[in-house]
Length: 150
Image: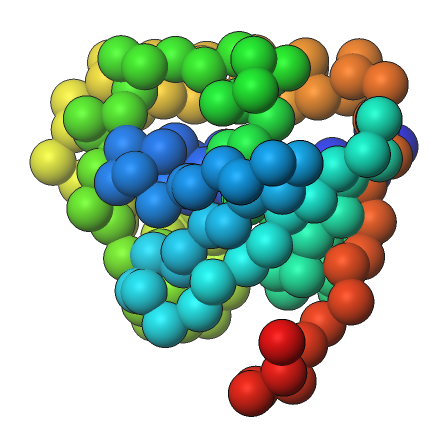
């Protein structure tokens, strides 16, 4: 991977997994957004992954739907002890409220955590990014569908 996502995208992936918002079907998966308003498709063929989530589509890095899929496929580490700390978080609302300052959104989301718990979450996410850096995959855009398209 050449372009890595912000570390906070790992937390969003953990939340998607904790909240059971990832559904596999063949060589694709659907991932619901944290507010339930959107559903993203992650598809793969060999080492090529594509997604129609905004981060993957517009920013060119693996967005949280891709990260969640890679974790559940066992291609990236998944720290299941982190999941309870990140369950039930509406990242969409937090990111909007904090004007896309992902670090501020993470601080707000984990306000009830101890410093040690937050440090453990950061360490866990850093391990995911280190593994992603070494992973031999290509991540790219999926075709964006217009509302009502199938």
